[in-house]
Image (cartoon, helix red, strand yellow):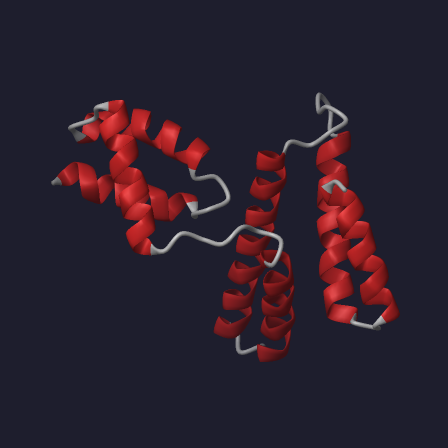
Length: 150
């Protein structure tokens, strides 16, 4: 069963259970994936990495929105955004811990043979591909900077 089929089944179960917030988040995921699938120049099937990238983007958007609502003293709207982010995050693979991330980035730096900050671009290119869906791009970048600065 591919991801969209699983998502459709989850939407059906959320409808039957009358879980409105979960249903709204699942429909949002399906909308984004269908848009990506039918975008100009896109193939009919979305690769797993592309799906994970879309889901990460959606979670980040929801968390950022929630923070903005909290800053504007709108906790009821922040709660909705946070709940949607939590539902979407269930479809992402488990994130790496800071220690696991550092170990993975160290291995990538050794594999690429980078020694200075000038080579950060090479490391980020490889790290972004290998750690897609497992860690946030900003966290990867911070870790690479920290390790190359030493």
